[in-house]
Length: 327
Image (tube, rainbow, N blue to C red):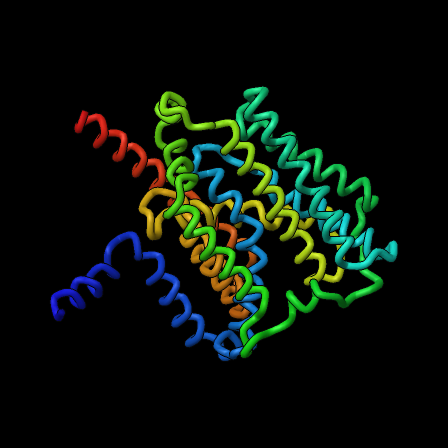
């Protein structure tokens, strides 16, 4: 029993858990440097903000794991944000508004998936085009301006600002979604196919795996979750902003590749992404409270993104070399 406990403790210090210790270190440093940072209210605000970002990039995590990419997610969120503000101001109930806005945003995922799966466009080119359409449409609908909401309230605001035992409802819902997705990712056939596509596309085709169905589903899922993130942003800011996506582009890619350094070494995974989102939220919040210029945070995020890409690339090469050696 003693040896088993020692093994479990030692396991926590393995490289794939290193970023978790970085997060703890950041919490300690910022708490010591700022009295405001360590207040319960600020720490809970970090969790609330993390909830929005985590939902927005959940679908992106799996797309990257398949070896593809999706850069349209922040502009899809911006489109949905504007659509939500317009529909609410038009007098539609929040329930109807959310359904219509999310459905409209999900269409962009259908377009991206069709371009990649059926027309064989490179995912980067296809999603750049879709991002441009989403952003332009949002600007057209909002006439390039921020649309402030005249009528606040409703169940969306309860989700965003409500708490249970002092913990934000939004974060609890996000945590529940991620735990379900973690099960789907690690314990189902779909999860196995997900990583098989990312490792060896040709082998999955020869094995009879329906590549088209999987990729199409993930692109639609990415747009769906980005759209939900856009609705939550609208409630948070009490406005729809066609330019809001710009601030989430670097963060989204960073947390996915950063998360690939955690748990599943070199492979994007949902728990890693969640931890990556919290880490960036802590970083941004701490730097702001310490009065450190915004561009410093952007530089740090760029470095973290580069580090994550390097780790994913090297890990993939190593796995390929090991398979070749075994063969």
